[in-house]
Length: 608
Image (tube, rainbow, N blue to C red; front, side, top):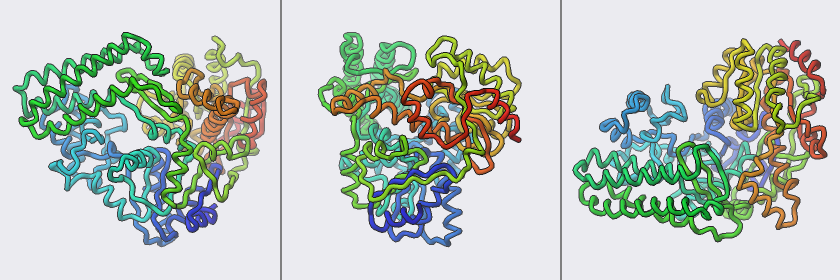
């Protein structure tokens, strides 16, 4: 693999490599990157993997190769401390929330010690901390060169370091955000390179869709209101009209969100625009934004801080007016709500043409790798999704002896996946396996609902510690799970990939059902209709490959080392009863198989 990567970098061609767990794929692309003549951008799936790559793998290899290349880590702007916003909010505490006040004090202490401004290094501040929007900037509220702290800006310093480095480690979200910025003709965030290497490349087409489209979120609007309120209180407290206008806009934004019901949801935006109530609520927000714009005009000469939010207000009004235009073909118009916010998305159904053009324009070498790219032992699905025409493709098998190290159990006599008694069946089966494994289990779910039902059933019946996604940050849950050595972890989507628990702390992975995307997902529906129009079978072309790759990711949590042993249990009859079950089974590592839970329990009891 390393030789193939080296050739692709030298000849500036495309290379696609599926490299199974344990092949050492990270070193196989890092070594050629450190040996090559040009500049290399390495992009990975998550911030956690980015940090592991930069702080652990890269230094080891630089030392081993005595490489003289300069390396740099570059994250998105929300990861860096904004000195200006911190000072602004320390002077005028933005809220009476005691959590935020306590966290502000921690960040202020961190600010006096840090050299990089990377908030991941601020002890006690997790990635979902409430204080983050107050101490980091967004593209909308960054003052750029007009900022009084511009010379000391950590984002600016990180980008200058990246410009000067030979190997820069970024993540996919930042890579595509940068592409989107370059498209609009603004300055780039990521320097141009001679080679691009994408690890966890199976995520690329989905992330690209988000950035090649457009979205407008009420969260950004609430951020704008909060920023303006801080300026109003600090600089122009006598402008009572501004305070009232902000309150009115805040109410109309909250009313718009309430039109969609209390629970989180997603759906077809075109259908929502047929509702008079939703259109009226949207028009009220636009009208209140327009009024805010008029009020801000009168404040421009009162505070020099108003100009930037004044421009954001106008831009927001334009974005909200555009959500009424649903006429473009080749796009999905959909919305999603969280507990507090509404986001409207316009997403392209196919990114392959645009991505292929970008690769052609750069003239660089491109390497795509992941443990999960193939479906039914072929790479066509992945290549088609990004418009790739690789000069070479490889599938490198894992060195692990799956036949000896692992057992796949497809239990008999389970109810259908959607049956009312399925949660009870999973609880019963999981209890037996937890007992046999002495804790040490991951239970992975395709829905929060099932996770909560099973958690309820388990919590009163086992003596081992149980951790469930959402109780605390992902990093802390994983640390506690590994430290205990006999705990049980329940998780959904974000625990299916990028989680690395080696050794005896994990010996059983239970998956509740095949990870097909929800059939009512608006983006999936649009992609399937588009596939049908092109003469493809939408199930075989869209749904099945996505589910196979997602399952392979979940399965990959079990065996992470050549000494690991474990049992994989998939609680879905369709693997045996439906013809497509064979596509899933052929795509999994070659484990021994059983349909008996007693055999699975016996295997677990013999693991030290």
